[in-house]
Length: 137
Image 1 (cartoon, one colour):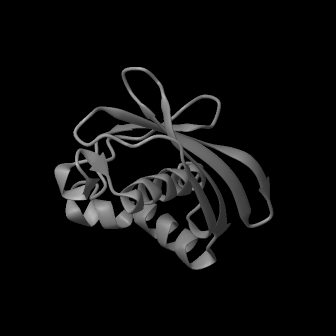
Image 2 (cartoon, rainbow, N blue to C red):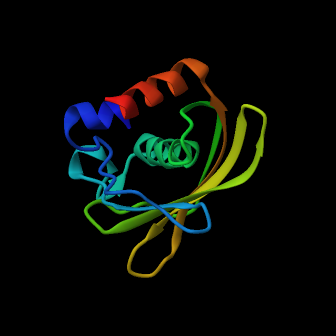
Image 3 (spheres, one colour):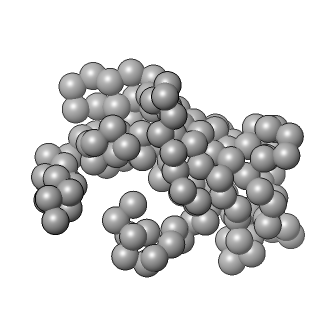
């Protein structure tokens, strides 16, 4: 989030994220042509990056910065370039400094699941104090 803020937009194409009443994070996005891996298909690294970003924003939008400790991505279907997509992530459980999170990337028009992710986000004391100092400005 901080890198995206410095750039003025998300380099992965994520739109505004919203924290839902159930604690999940939702965003709309699109894979730009600069992230094409094959003809009209997103590069797998872009897909993994999007899931890493969205899963990492679950603790962030709950007021805790965390770094990725583990990330597993399952590629279900090719992700199309230049088509509206949705990403959603949620907390599976929270144990100490670890947030166990999961999420999915879907095609906006049909809600077809294109990729899923599971991760462990580890709260970073250094990053958390940085977040608090940004709120104090």
